[in-house]
Image 1 (cartoon, helix red, strand yellow):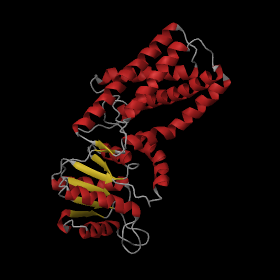
Image 2 (tube, one colour):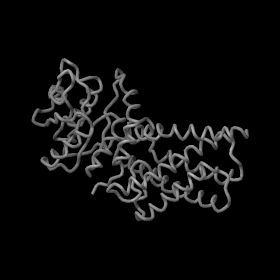
Image 3 (cartoon, helix red, strand yellow):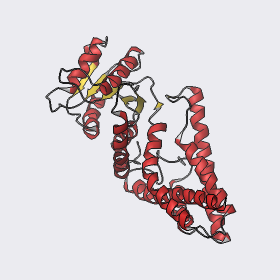
Image 4 (cartoon, helix red, strand yellow):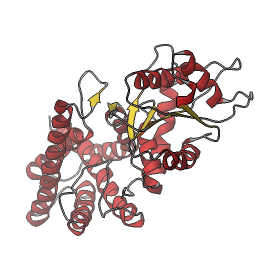
Length: 337
């Protein structure tokens, strides 16, 4: 039992080390960008507090969580401070979780999961556990196996964090009445028909158009190596499904997420679009959100369905893990004005 307790504390210390480091880097990213200090849609929202207070909380969280991870045996003062800062995150995580379920109940958005779970709920549980371990095990020295598990959990967290975002934020559907819908491109076959993945995105676009949520659709994609024009293939497909050709605009330069963002923003201005929907797979949506936020454009994301025959989902999800961190470090917390 004692050995199991040490292993569990190693698991908790690994998470604390990760979130302590995340909090530290988030301070830099937030202030280096154009956002409010401490603002980050990818962790916990404390927007009810002044930015300078958020910054102080973030600095203390970074120092105390990393301290707990590296030296769990602590005196009363450090124990009290670590428990207190963790309790603050418990409070705001609970507040964020409550707001999520209220919005879900009010129909402001919906989840494509059978059981809707916000990311803030994971953070809430994690910090409750940290508080318990800080209070109950502060006098116990570290164990070798505990340290090994801490390192393993710390490294694993770099994959688990973006995966959790994909499966929480990415599966949340924010579709509502909008001025325009952007459909992110994917591979098209040599005969000009959409691949299984692209068809899923286009079927979602047709569904949204027929529901009257978007009068205009921007098809964004590039030119394949087989010379197939993705946006043209996308337009042909939705027109065949009953969408008027006049409702479809093309962005042939959208070879990747960044190019799509760069190309579509001028189109938004031409259309006078204020509310923008973006349609793609769940794993892609967090990165899309960050890319548009970097340009100070707030978009609403809507996940397409997953075709059972689509065998690219697992590989695409894994590829999004490093991409998530790159986009977050580059522009993840820039605010929309």
